[in-house]
Amino acid sequence: EDQWSPLNPEGKKHYDREFLLQFQNDINAVRKPAGLPDIPDIILDKPQSVGRQYS
Amino acid sequence: MASGDSETKEETGQEEDQQIVSPDQYIKHPLHNRWAMWFFKNDKSKEWTANLKLITSFDTVEDFWGLYNHIQKASRLSSGCDYSLFKDGIQPMWEDASNKNGGRWLVNLNKNQRQTELDNFWLETLLCLIGEAFDDLTDDICGATINIRNKGDKLGLWTRDARRGDATVKIGQKLKERLKIPPKIMIGFQAHSDTATKAGSTARDRYRV
Image 1: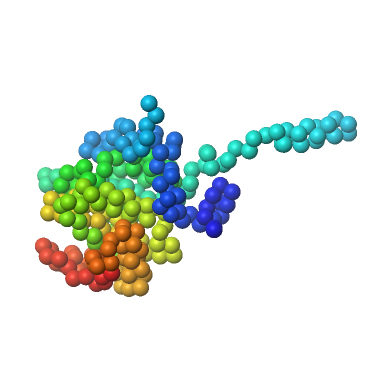
Image 2: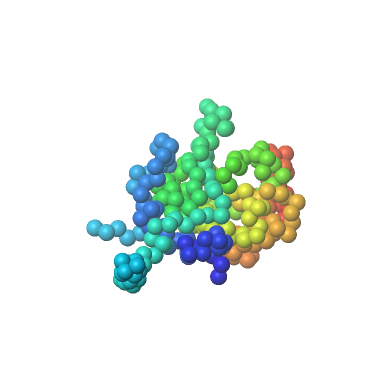
């Protein structure tokens, strides 16, 4: 398989759904991105899609 | 000489002891394209373009999720609102040079599907776009929109050139497969130029899958 990876930087940047889904709760994905505009209709302060929360 | 030899030995020893940290843990996964997410809210007191707002753009898997996780689900938007995800540089409107000769595959949702299917359909479409599910047809793809409407929500996958029949049909088949739309339910493709001149009624389908 010729998918991009850190060790295969020339690989194709094509990712299937399972591959993409595994990053939904990645540490980089649960932090609110910097610089989002102020649109109260849609912008959330806390991630809503995170599956299991540690308590 | 002697000190040189001992240094070499030390380095070799260190190498063996070192834990190899996987680069996966700190390198974000780059996307083939850079994408921009837009929000439209229908405020009749303003011009159409004033109601269209760029949320942000991103070009890694992790940054996509960061955005997705911090914006409201499509099913919770009020009627008259849209989300759009387009390649960076293409505006989510017919008039854009990349769209004007194009069209869209249209998936109509009924009222019940807003709660059961809409968010899944939209996320699946987003994953198709950013993951390049259309493989070598990526240049045919412009973006996608989800329209929240009381009379029926709509998902559209926008392509660049409505005359490219084979490519358009392949894209429609892939979308239908990824959304798990049953074979007996047909979806249609309309050219923007047909839709624009048919105000109020439905433009004819150029293709169906």
